[in-house]
Structures are given as C-alpha cells and as structure tokens.
Amino acid sequence: MLKKTSALKALLILLFPVIFLSSAFSQTDSTKVLLLGPEFSKYLNLDKDQLVKITPLRDSIQAILKIENDRREEIRAKMQSGERPGREEFMEMRDKRQKDIETIKGLIEDIKKVLNPEQLEKFKNVELPNLEMRRRRMRPNN
Image 1: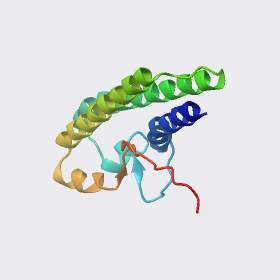
Image 2 (image 1 turned 135 degrees about the horizontal axis):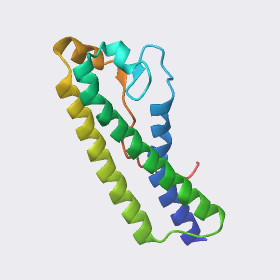
Image 3 (image 1 turned 45 degrees about the horizontal axis):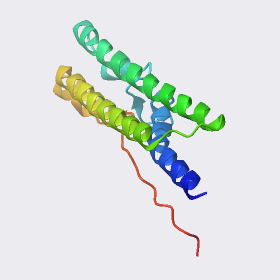
C-alpha cells in the first residue's frame, strides 16, 4: 500500500505542472493575450520580418507542449491499466520535463529579442505557458 501511495504521489508531482500547460491553449483572462493564441501577432502588431522569425519559435513551443501532453496521457493510460512506472522512469520524465522547460524559456527569450521596445512593453501582458514544476506536500488532515 505504501508503494502504491508513493507512486501516486510521484505521479501527481510530475503531472501537476503539465495540467497548467493546458492554459497555453485557452484564454482565461480577457486582459491577457496568449503566447500561442491566434491574437498574439495582431496584439503586438508584428511586421512580416518579425512574423518570419517568431512563427517557428512559437511552433517549437507548441510542439514541446504537445509532447508533454502526450507523455502525460501515456502515463495516465499506464496507470489505468494497472502498470506502475518505476522510479527510473519517473526520474527520466522529470529530467525531460526540466530540459523542455529550459528550451521553452530560451525560445521565449529569442522571441523577445525580435521585438521592439513598444512591443516588449506589450509583451508583459502576454500569457506564457506555466512552466514551473511545483511540488505539493501531502499533509494529514487535523
């Protein structure tokens, strides 16, 4: 029972941040424009040269997020079938996730380099994918 609980806790720790990545695909705050949303280019008033440079960067971010989602679905399917990923598999997933986070952060910085000062100011209102790996402590209820 303890192993099952530990495995579930580890799974929750790994999957919790991925759930928040879904916010990159749907607009929740009407004052913010999504980095991966259709209004991004129009909001920042990007010119053609900027679009040529930024579009592949946004596409790369979206591809990484899709891979993250696919990994999450794969683990969910394994857990539902009764298969429990081992510690090594969890560690490998965590390492891949950390690498993906660093890659996305770099791509966001590359996008910023293409923007002019006015666009950089507006970029502060752009909603970025939530990339933080959060750990939740399981506390007993008192």
